[in-house]
Picture (cartoon, helix red, strand yellow):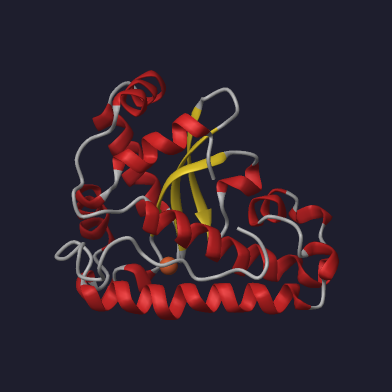
Length: 205
Ligand SMILES: [Fe+2]
């Protein structure tokens, strides 16, 4: 991903994740919220041609080196674009269970898949206000769970994001209102574990 950034198309229909995530939430989330991050990121970089050749991953990894005047915008809108792009790609209608390598890593790092799920849910429920819970890996394939505010991403902490859940209210309020726990527990059934496995395998962002 590089400037000018574009809103990615989803590989499934807006109603594909229903009833876990309803069609209206998906449509607003993708066409309004995500589009706004893309547009504002492009706007921020418009007057900085020296940064336009950088990938989004590169920008987020090196926030501290960016001019102070746009650092916050790249953090928020660039993070928002990265986060939502990963979010859509790691969701799907078929759910299923972790692939072989994912399963092994989860067992090695957390004891079992269920122990990982419990720890991840606790982090997702503990995010105060708006933010995300992430499963991420470091260079040594050690897995970490991050609870991050706003649109921060594990890349900003030197890790590679594998799977994240958006716990901003815009991600679940229409169907779940304030019941974040219900949303988090239901969300597991639409995780695209094949994509998570691919990301582990290739160290992909
Ligand atoms: Fe979101």
